[in-house]
Image (cartoon, rainbow, N blue to C red; front, side):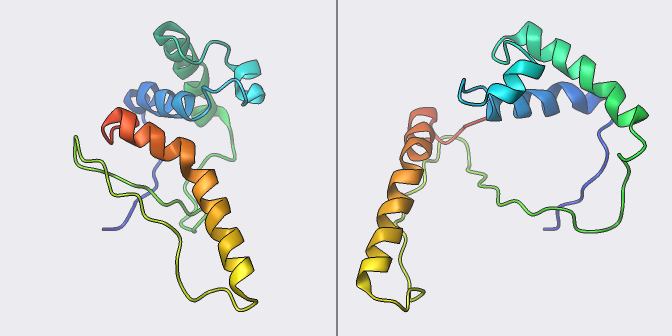
Length: 126
């Protein structure tokens, strides 16, 4: 199924800003919090959506290009489905078992919070 990138219409902005806010609601992301304070409240998200709506209309660089501009990998789970946690494995490390073990541990630690959030939300992160 192809993903089609299109400009947001006015009705899309509340959901688009809610998704952006959820992605950056951690206090560790200080830049978005500086631009859009209180990303976690419904009122601030509505105000933020209202603020970014004109950007798509006024910014001369916001336009469809017909070119690939980014890549993303999305995980979409059926409601209530929590996927099995898979560990990193494969034949990609040529420089010995230590390199592979390091990569596996880094992968496990990196995904630890994400996996916990998936479990706690029943697979529904947004």
